[in-house]
Amino acid sequence: MISRWIGWLRDKQSGSSAVELDALERPLRLVLDLLVVMTGPLRHDAKEPWFAATELYGRLAEARGLSAGEVVEEVQYLRELLVIEIADLFVALPVRHQLPALLRISRVLDDAVTNATVGYTDALVEKMFSRDGVPVTTADSVQELLGQLHALEAEARVLRERSAG
Image (cartoon, rainbow, N blue to C red):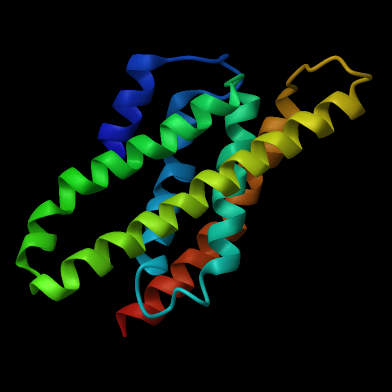
């Protein structure tokens, strides 16, 4: 699913090259890993890392030069991919569980859209204030954002291990 999401991003290739699309694989994988946890029994424990990861995704979108609407579109495409990929699983569920499962995933993705938009907006405002109103992405700011991934990936790994056994 990650390769399809990156392929779609590459096909539409909007924004600047401040963040290479290949560098987005880690944050996209993190979002997907946490999405799995957010729809399971550890969802309450995963809320903070989920918020941080999706906000980071929004900040990276701002660094890529996207508009707020494009951030929403990218997360909505994840929703579309998920519906296609896990449709068979929904059909296999008992009828009374199908809609609640779909609604839970949808609610989690709605939060992702909101958090990514917040991250995008915060990054844009910070950039405007720190650069005297001149929005210029620097390599340092992009590297700082990518550096935050390590801690979030470690949290996601712990949550995955806890949910597995």
